[in-house]
Amino acid sequence: MLNKVLIIGRLTKDPVVRYLPSGSQTTEFSIAYNRRYKVGEEWKEESHFFDVKAYGKLAENLGTKISKGYTVVIEGRLTQDRWTDKEGKAQSRVRIVAEAVRIINKPKLDEAPEEEVLPDSYEHGEEEKLWNSQDDEIPF
Image (cartoon, rainbow, N blue to C red; front, side, top):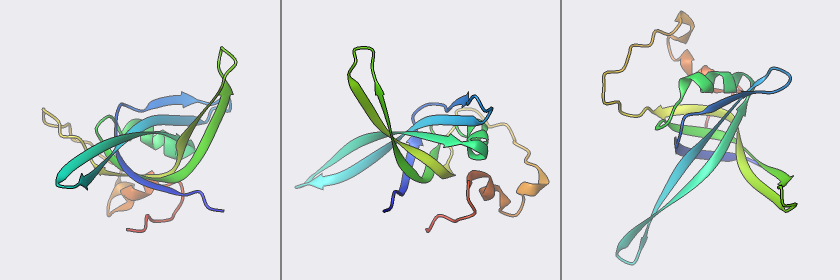
């Protein structure tokens, strides 16, 4: 069986950082994916929203490096949360668990951005390793 997701979307709000009882960090955010299609001669657009969660080192990096408006590529898997609400009704939701995230576009700012100085280890394209929870590359 296979459970693999590859999606490009824009963050709809700033990420929320939480800590598990073990001390490990999780980062949660949501993205919007817009689909454009033609019906007859008319173009239509529909938006879809997805919740994303990251764990461990990936969560630590994302919590400080992305924010609302960033466009990202997410590689991960789907998971389903199930619970019973206060009225006793069964509830569920599907979310993406991120295994790798790459920034492909930062939002345009009204003011000049502050210069960010990265450590020497980020020179020569090594910054991409920051976003991977594995050493695999996204196939495009």
